[in-house]
Image 1 (cartoon, rainbow, N blue to C red):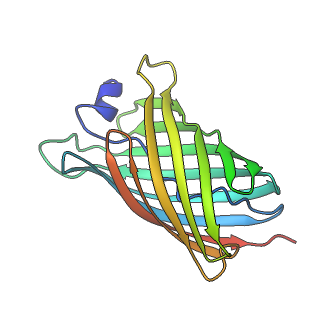
Image 2 (spheres, one colour):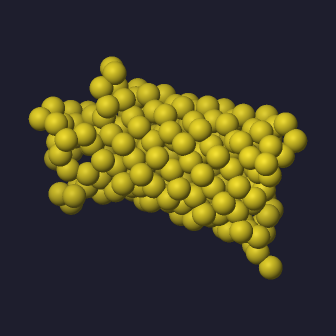
Length: 193
């Protein structure tokens, strides 16, 4: 099997939604996150993803995040019926209050033993209203490492909704990168001592 089965004939879409903004966690803060997303191509569902993320505020300008997603294709004769697992180590760097750069390394692993590495740089451009609402534009590019696959640019748009975005956030998001994606995530932030 090759990368074509991951992003071609089986129509398993690459992870495109982040449920993030340019907001940084303060040093010692821990983020607990859960999310669900659905990916489609030409009005056909390609996969539904269920995942979680654990984030750490290393400094006020640098956050480290670990992410896991189960990528589940629909059970149909049109698709391969094996699932994929997605792992990500994300380095997020604040450029200013409304701009952050994310430089994650990602890995996709299938049930049959195939795996693919991806470098997935992202830019977070965020507009805010007080500490209760955010709108973020996220241009990105999926760069497949060592597989001879052309880079795949993408974009997503997300909201951050909360009574206090430093404590928790509900984050609906939509995106496009050859596949249309939509989902929602919930983050809870635990302040460190």
